[in-house]
Image (cartoon, rainbow, N blue to C red; front, top):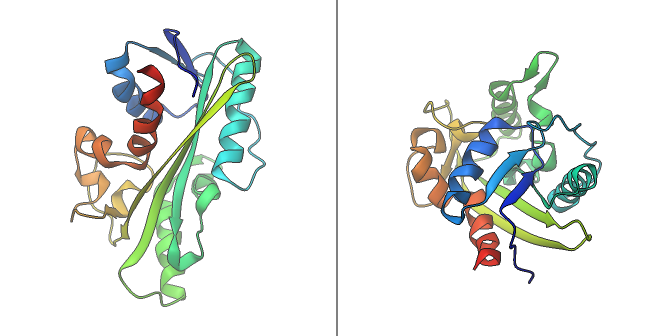
Amino acid sequence: MRRFTGNKLLVATHNAGKMEELRALFAPHGVELVSAGEMGLAEPAETEDTFLGNARIKARAAMEATGLPALADDSGITVDGLDGAPGVHTADWAETPQGRDFVQAMTRTWRELDERAVPEPRTAQFRATFVLVWPDGHEEVFEGTAPGRLVWPMRGRQGHGYDPIFVPDGDDRTYAEMTAEEKNRISHRAAAFRQLETIFA
């Protein structure tokens, strides 16, 4: 595994919530993070059908545009009762002409579970895949999963995305009812990051 020895890392995202989480996770390592959104980079088309494939597209596009080492993650929620959907299309389910609306996405998810008469507990997993690409093309891959179940109605005001309906295993609160610190200890992104941290050792 290649060690990361720089002090600046480009994160291939335009998602402010994701950057907030990552800055908190990276804080102990003294690495400055800058996002693709902050640098005005275009968002590449995510044409793959796996989290790994889409993370690789984003990381390589950001690295090639700037010459900086680039980290991308592709993440989403897979719902067992929906055969793994929305999966890589998690953000797509939230798209509207006015921007992303995750209340719409969560409502659709619960409605489709009802239509299939899926019994409770309605199990699901948040998944995250990180790809770190260096300017010479070398890459490292790190994956994390957070298993849990979906609940309705939505609960809590913290977090983003599907957080208000996802209860992680071992707790009775949704991600949106937890503090950022509590969520960051157990999230799918934190699980992937624990592997990523080893390159700073």
